Image (cartoon, rainbow over all chains, first blue to last red; front, side, top):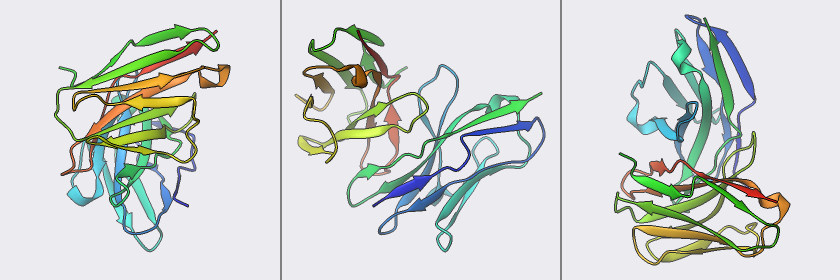
Length: 109
Length: 112
């Protein structure tokens, strides 16, 4: 069975502090990994995908196939990063994604 | 401009009264998804279309049906809503080249 685990339901940091949102997955094959974000009163949207290897809004995520993890990191959190974050591996063969339960990040001033 | 549009944003129905939620897209994407999301939970895939090919998730209740009359529109029909069906329903599209999903704002369904 395909599973995604985001162990932290809630995460709170102060502005300027580093932040790491954890994601572990159990998936057959080689999924493509994504992070989606939902800001307050906005729709769910893509934050970044692992194959792009890019930094979006200061966030990066490294795929660790050995540990089957895809943790999201940012060295200096900002208040506008407060949002709900979902890790979502995509099974290319099946043509669908599985979403984790999400982590609510709060960045305090 | 919104590219995936869900109507209505809020829907109230009575227990057992059929209800239809709609989704339209201007992206011309092949794939469309319907998710159910309950409070503090992950979006749960109900079904998806690849063009007209319908794919039902094994645990999607028979109470839920879907129609996709053309590329732009997709409907979610709940034949006999129960209290447990109250949730946010999300529609998403995907262009096959990139596996990135584009979400609508959702329809929040209340069942009285």
